[in-house]
Every structure is written in structure tokens, then in C-alpha cells.
Image (cartoon, rainbow, N blue to C red; front, top):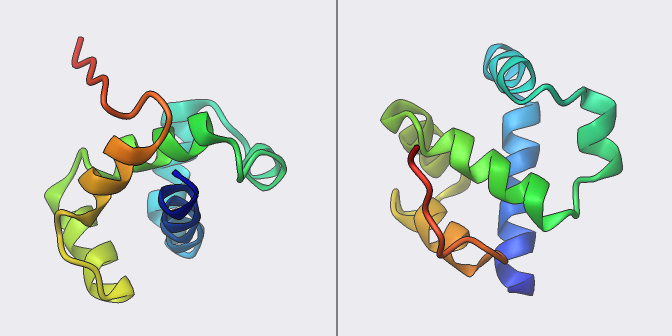
Length: 90
């Protein structure tokens, strides 16, 4: 779980560096940049970041390429975060 959280933080850091994509995330989540900074270690926030990123294949591919990850790594991270094994698509 600690490893998954550390890797999810790396994904969050990547997201913060993607200005346009970050704006989409903030708009859709209702979070502010301050919220992300304050709660960056919160597993629920990290899971929401991962859930957001896996919504679009292009985002997964870009992040994976930039971080040197396999494209499936985000899903593995999600599964390892608290509550991550539960998928709700409604």
C-alpha cells in the first residue's frame, strides 16, 4: 500500500505539470490546487487522481511514457490503494 501511495503521488505530480489536464481534473473534481497540496498523501485523493487519469487512454499513455511505466501500472496502483479494488462505474 505504501508503494502504491508513493507511485500515485508521482502520478499526481505528473498531473500538476500538465496545465490543461490539471484544469480538467480540478474542474471535474471540485478540488483546488491548494486542496491537492494539502491532501496529497490522502489515499482517497490519490485514488481520485488515478481514477481520473485512467478515464482516457491518451492520458495513461502519456503519463506512462513520461514516467517510464507500463501502461497497466496505473490500474495496478489503483488496486493497491485502500478501496481501490472496488470499482463503481455508475
